Image 1 (cartoon, helix red, strand yellow):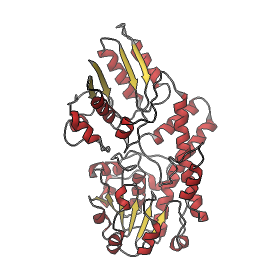
Image 2: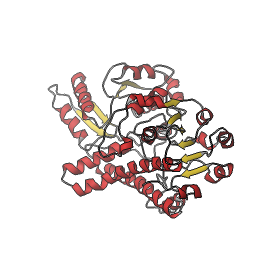
Image 3: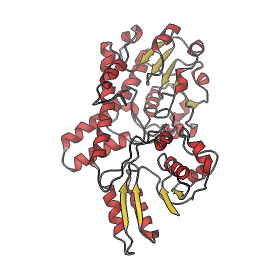
Image 4: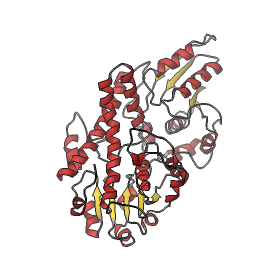
Length: 423
């Protein structure tokens, strides 16, 4: 029997191995992870991650996994990769094929190869790269029906070019959203027109409060680092702008909220709808919601958060995280755990918005499109504000109800024009 051991039971390893186990019953799949609670969760009815369709797949075979091994942590942290490679070399008794799947810096495969091949056992290791193109929220569908499968060895520069191009597109449309607001244009119409160009395509041309997720920022910073290591300062600075535009988008969103609400949100209740970095996932890594909430808390707002798939414990941990960055604006700096006392989490959108002065939509969950906004409006303080960071709602319908609406990249209404935000 063929046996596969997956090191890392996160958003890539878990779903990927679940689908392999389902589709390849003759293959024995074992998943190990350094986190005992994570493995325990995989063996329970409460999976450690939310992914559309994953629960049904796991229930079909429900094979227990081990509670030991390495692989947790960020893929770009070579400490984990080195530890995993050394463990593989230490326990292997026959020739092995080692496949790296998570996004990692260039040359990582070669580093693993050096560790594995410099053992004295006479064992042959073949190092392959099978990069994952999973989009969180559709990972199971992507695994069942992948639009492309790449298998390569050593280095694949084309993959790095694709990553860089994608980040460039997202940052460009977010930068364009600011210009659209200033000129009265509609960013959705602009991006639709641009997306008609077959050389570009419509994907990832949706303006938002900012991009997030475990890979976007990590990959572009890896690209910056590689450029700097090769003495390409100008190229590195070019890609740094992608991160700066993303930070600017979040800062601009917070500034718009504060300026619209009479230049202060102190003591005001702000309902946050959505905390995950995108819909159909419970992943909060690098989610723009963290920085937006920190910015509002910095101005002493009272935050009420609702997300259908993110646990309160995760939200509290994210908001209390200490991570100082001198390149970030002051309101995005670390906060003390005591600041989290100004935050509450609820499990109902209507409960979150009750008595609120404003609503911030930070994740494009489908349920936010069909909420009874007349009911929400009636239960809010007046004037009632909606700040749509994902262009989820029909702004005109909400304005007819009585809301003052700000939508990323959309023409501003009279109220917002009279209260310009600081850039």
